[in-house]
Length: 393
Ligand code: NAD
Ligand code: MG
Image (cartoon, rainbow, N blue to C red; front, side, top):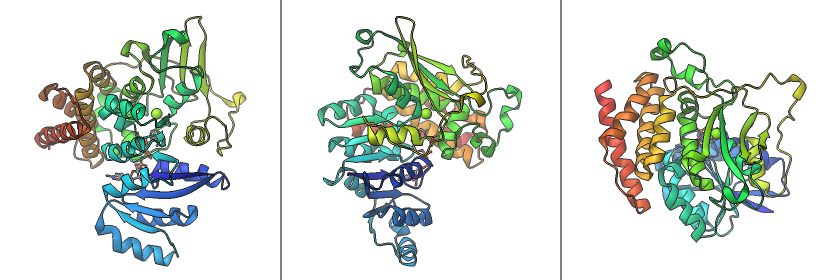
């Protein structure tokens, strides 16, 4: 029996995690769940999984949560604030932490789980984008077990040889990591019409149902850029080891190419419960609720290269990755500011890349030697991005 904390339990990944856990009541129990805004869902989830603790971000939600809990006969204990997230991630009772808070807010609780040597199921890619090297050093130092949940990275993990050693591609005969992406809802849209894209259009992903921030990132392919950076740190890759390939059907979730000409791909229906289940049960396999692939009904597979003009954010991210930690931290912060402004209908879809690029240009590259410096630099980049945003309003 494994004991799990689910950070970001009310989100898309969080709910899928609770769904997989509920299918295996004899294998997993839930210690704590956290949520930010959707209190009714937090309470129904806590009741369904019998969570011992519910963590909320703000004291101001306490009274409303308490009322909902007594109505629902929910007996979980309430904890409040960022420190409480760290507590439930590092508590001695906990074996595994699902890191599924969106954005920079996920960094510190995920690191707390790492420092406590937990099995960490990493959905929150932003924490690696912000602090890759420091994060991976902490994983090694504290002997945490880091398992990727992002479908592409989970696929790569499944396609690597079992004895793969960090950064040792040559030794394993690997020539390339092929990171696939669908190209999002605007893959074939006329570029002249991009200025009028609405948030709902950007969030209508053709293959995946996800939270709104990652959906916008998928439409701009910033998501693939963040994943490029994530892959570099997870597996110890050089930028030249990674190739981004558009595969609109999202059936292949990524591939590893070997020197002998073999390409090993991981396939499946686009449903995050597959990587979540693999993370929870690794090295075993458990049933996840995902429909098996029906090959006879699959459309043709196609593959293209991502165009620079259509996906400027992808190339900003690859450039930032080459520059290093300070640039990826800045890009992540600017992008969070810009995507939120786009979702709030304050700026156009094209403004996201403008804000990201200008913020990168305005901030000088510096070495970031500690998490405190990363967080400080993240705040500085948000201030600059907000100033640039202000000029666009
Ligand atoms: P989501 O928006 O559906 O859920 C986000 C969760 O984080 C919610 O529980 C929300 O309450 C919580 N949250 C938001 N802001 C917070 C804050 N400031 N403090 C504490 N909690 C906060 O997002 P999602 O789609 O589930 O994505 C979660 C993470 O997983 C993201 O980092 C995303 O990039 C990654 N991811 C998601 C998918 C997917 O299919 N949804 C796939 C791969 C990776
Ligand atoms: Mg992904």
